Amino acid sequence: MITVTRNELIALCTKAFDATHCVCGESDAIATMVVDLEMAGLDGLSRFMLALELAREDMDTPPNVSDADDNKIFIDCHGASIVCHLPSLVDYGLEKLAGRPSITLNIQRAHSRWLVFSELRKLAGKGLSVFARWSGGDEGVEVECFLNAGQLFPDIFIDNQVRSFSQNMQIVISKHPTEIGEHVAAMQHISSASLETTYHGAFNQGIEVNSEYWQRLKEIAATNLVEDSDISRQRAGE
Image (tube, rainbow, N blue to C red):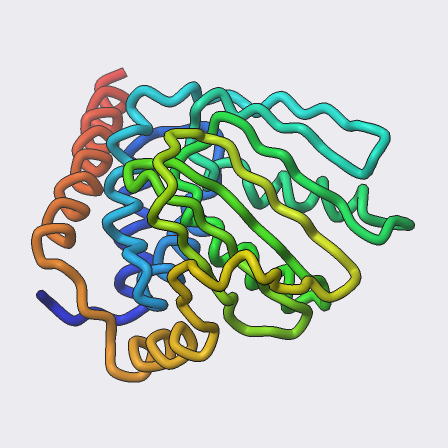
């Protein structure tokens, strides 16, 4: 393990995503999503490493978006990472929220859904309440996140008994508080308070990162530098 600063990790993750040459997604915004999850102790870096591997086969195209009459938006991400599309999808959802009590984003065929963490926090900072639910992924679990207006970190509940391999996700953005139902009583609970403590500890003392992940990110980022250098030499010879 090595200890790095938030800025150092954001800078490296930005360069690593740039190396994928994905058209969809802003690298600095994605890097912030990764680092926020890592600082909260939710394995942001390992999830990002997997997303980078999957990016090689992702369809690098905008999602298909369709509106329904009942405050719902249906989104098909074609099996791509949610981090490439979520900020713009949230902006679209907020436009539709005007004049309505809530809006639901029904997202289909998207991976790396844990990385929505940062965007959910931003919505709560804007005075909105958020509920997010998904199941499947490599872990085969169901995850539910509750985050009310002004709350800095979500309460997360995980059902380890579910064995689903769905790539779908639901995000409800509401102007009214979201209540935590009794059905979560038997689920593993990661409290808002524990996430906040872990996050601020990483902010003040540095982020402990797996040294192998750090080295691998540097190698991925370096491939982009090599390609840029090759292009520069080719242009110099024109």
